[in-house]
Image (tube, rainbow, N blue to C red; front, side):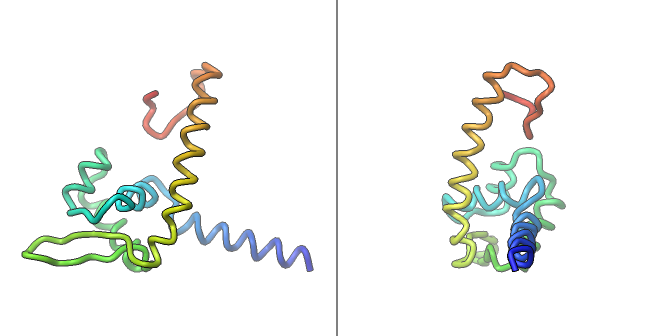
Length: 120
């Protein structure tokens, strides 16, 4: 029975990684935790994302019910859905862990260690 339970837990972890994993999805969600944003605001926040990639990732997150798109005066706004808001505490935990991790790695002064942005 424990093996079956472990398999279900691993499935759940894989589901989460699939939905919010990758280079951009979690960053988009983190950006939207602050407030609703227009497409260009998101692109500015994410700096190196192409418009094509941002469109693809926004559609994926919308299909998975994590964000909603609102049209107002010929402008599209993106925001966390009610379901997406349930990720806010997870994102806060990821941010806190990332800050600790970066500090530990920097203290190691190991040039072989890599960060997503390669700057620290």
